Image 1 (cartoon, rainbow, N blue to C red):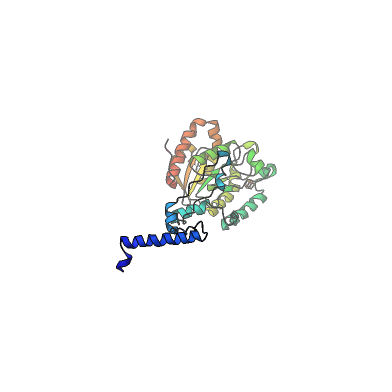
Image 2: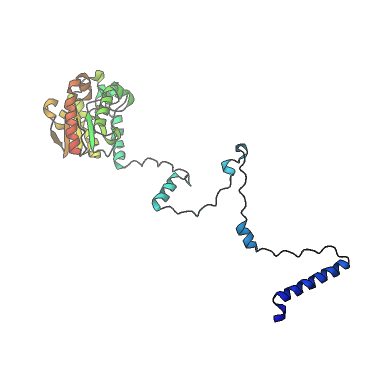
Length: 297
Ligand code: SF4
């Protein structure tokens, strides 16, 4: 194909092209259509032409953040066990909150105490006290208490309300109990007498003898490890002694295998506040025996 290459071939092609155009011109053709341009690969166009960024909107026309398109959410990451628990705590409960459990049914000790309570309420062994009382004051507190406070007899406030130690002396006893880091519900409080002596006089020996059975039965039912006698009447009655509180306090005594502490009656402490420090010493001794940490001071 040597005749189609080189300068001669190019000259021949130009001559043929010129003759063809002259022939077309003579035939009336004035303009030839342009051949279609070769198409660029689509991939090349995409790679070269970059879409310009949109013009930023004025601030007033910007959509609120909540309406703005968000980037695609990343796959959720499962939290570790501890975080999962924290999430469960912060999430609203799936079920309604639990209804507080009703108080436990009275146990055998409560039932046994109620039997004694009813006997006391009917008791008229002490004619004068039974006639003048508003009501008997049996006792109150935890029937499973490790510690019982034994007082003397109801006063006017107790006679009116039917509960032991609810007047001014009772408020001081509450402070003593709190100083021992205990609550009233932790202990049981009772008196030697269940009826108020007229004028808050000291109980008579026959009245104490009449009522002794009741507090002894209470203590047998509760079975406390410790008994704190408040005042001379309680201490001398329980321990069957005539020694004064000043000689009985500061040491442990025994009552049917239970450890007994003697201290001053709250009513006496209200009249003689300088003796409170001795009661606090007695309470610290009691707390140590009960295994309760004693505060400094
Ligand atoms: S003080 Fe005791 S023994 Fe005397 S009447 Fe009252 S409950 Fe009975």
